Image 1 (cartoon, rainbow, N blue to C red):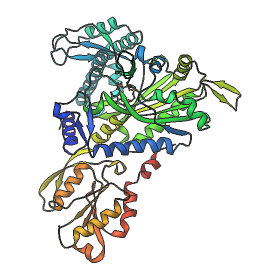
Image 2 (image 1 turned 180 degrees about the horizontal axis):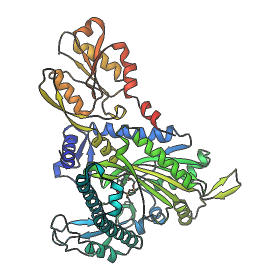
Image 3 (image 1 turned 60 degrees about the vertical axis):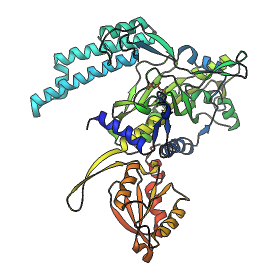
Image 4 (image 1 turned 135 degrees about the vertical axis):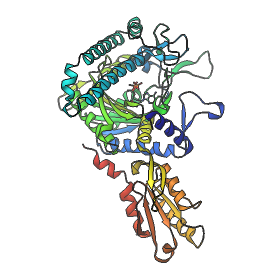
Length: 518
Ligand code: ATP
């Protein structure tokens, strides 16, 4: 199965089992907007809890807030979003399709990397055991040619975007002979800037109403509350403020399911430090955040850092945490050293003094900021795509069978335990209900008595339930049940009284937190 097929199956599976639905589906949907279903919302809530507790509860110098989506419009002038939160767009005149010009070039660059890898694979086949990758890369004229062209184009793109030189961006697209994937032609319009913020009106009469924006990031709600939190919480630098909330961007090209949406959710933390300390903290948060991702156990090779070559004018360091999605390595989280740009500008635009008095040095200053910013929805996609598996099984009689399983980290699974009476009679449902009523005080549980036990196990595998508790006739005699483990499909007999401790050991988020290095 190709990665593309796998991804299509994942999207279909997410809908079939109540994780994610296209928005407004009975009206043919709304592009790049999605709804979370009954299991999706549980998965999303668990991811948010994993983030919130790891950031706010485990770090005693981080507190959380929940600021409003609507904010004073001047905030977006101060932050630079009104003037510069743009993407360069280009249309193909034949297919009438719209693209992000920078993404077209980035895809061309990625193709050059693939070409290089193909050359290497060919040579490896030719040379066999003796093959020395490094030597080949350094000496092959073909690789040298591709790589030099690639780097030259990359440098041109970085310069053109930094200088906002849209003619040059178009020229690069022409020089690289990039064609529209739909029409196959090079018939492009000029490159234009497109502001990604959604506007709306506040006020009861339209004439007197003011234009306001739906926030494109949650971070500004943190910056404008810096003094409120610092003073009311008597916070001492270094300290952080965290927030989870909706953000809105009128993305030009919205593709790849919930990877790029127009309404999405972010989990952001702004860490305020003494000027000069920011790069030390940048490294600290890079390590912390990577370890948060890796604790999920999907494999360290599924992640990498991608340091930014084109830094925003206010940043002095920036990196992305990338995850290997079925469609390649892509950003899930950004870690940015934003200097004093945001607080400094809010001080200027609001006319209020936004400074911190450092009792140790006796100085007042505008703190520097290191931010960690991750999309909840991209995390959901990460977890779903890493967990989705089609497995071939050999039954006891030697015949073949298969199952679809979502092998979620147990702590993130939407349903933790399924209680399944073997048959619908002989008092087994009553015992099942009794167990369920006890367990649901602590865990998300499901009760299922329909169909054969095998079918019920498959249904639980397909939604990623880590544990099934089966009640059978022996239960009525000795108060023991069978616990069946999702990943190994192993079964063991345990006393009902042992269930709470066993479940806690298997599904508690504590196991994840312990793996995060601090
Ligand atoms: P991209 O380059 O993919 O557009 P970005 O660099 O603009 O992302 P940031 O502004 O750094 O993203 O936002 C922080 C995080 O918010 C991203 O790492 C991503 O997880 C999430 N995010 C940003 N835009 C979207 C979107 N349109 N849909 C879903 N998540 C998003």
